[in-house]
Image (cartoon, rainbow, N blue to C red):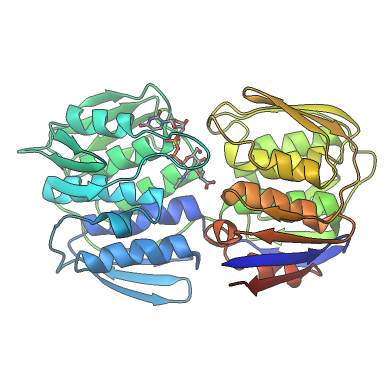
Length: 418
Ligand code: EPZ
């Protein structure tokens, strides 16, 4: 078990360099299976989610070579076989192997553990899309067997602009016969990154980044070199750190255009921002004012930044309102923030943050990835020392977060406990 200890109220100065996007990389790695040749991906974040996906690839017989943030994947000797529960349950993004294996071999047999702490997270839209392409879906407990005689292009409307379903259906249809149109598709930057990757392998996908994606099936996919896009959620997390305790903090290798919703809310609060082409520089401001946010699909306010942003709202004068519209249980950081001195009440999908409140170091626990990030941000600006247990949740999604924060002056240490 790991925990971190943070001594708060340190100024953060210097440069934090953003890594490759977790939510892009966890789709690109399984998607590599679709190629008949070797695929090289650069700027892959060194996080445990990628370790788990590499394990599944090797289990299937692929050769994976990792060198820092560079990954070479050779799927030429892959044998399609059932993916057992003990390796697929390590992360939800294992569901991208459904689309990739179905797309390439017209059959996938894998366990997929539904749900996680932030919500029930069904995959009904993924399965409905697979059926639209001509596959049959058999569920035995949480084991799925999805297979098709032939995959034929189809018109698929997504009731929810689901990131996972959009990506999985791109993977399943890229080698199908004919053209697939996904309507009400998700538009997140990682959707565009995956479509670009597939097109570099020889696919024919247009419209990624809009709500209508067209995939014209091709015979086969070749190798390619691809670079993972910078992680805009990691970027947003460190921008919020700067708003809380920055002193000329620079966040480099970023794409500010991916964060318009966050940046406009920070300006509303009164955070002084310098936004460059691929960087943001900021220092902690004074007299932050309360605001309200509603999480929404891209380009709306990202649900993944709702929790870190709520920590900043505790430092804003007045009552802020946070509406979480994507997941049904994404306020688990609230009791811990309140223990640290915040004054937050929740009612259904809405939280009310009464600021400004001084925060104090406490013993708290990370319940999920972004809740843990919110607690680290609170610890950085709290008076005294905070310990955060179950920090594995955070380490799986933020590459080198301890070192990145130490390098700009945070007093933060990682500890192994029993
Ligand atoms: C991806 O999850 C991300 N994970 C999440 O990031 C992110 O919060 C989410 O997209 C929204 O942006 C990865 O990319 C690995 P969805 P995903 O399908 O694909 C419901 C993080 O912190 N839904 O867009 O699972 C679902 O329950 C993680 O990095 C269905 O009902 O999200 C949710 O309420 C957390 N049926 C909503 O749609 C389905 O078939 C959005 O889910 C699929 C989804």
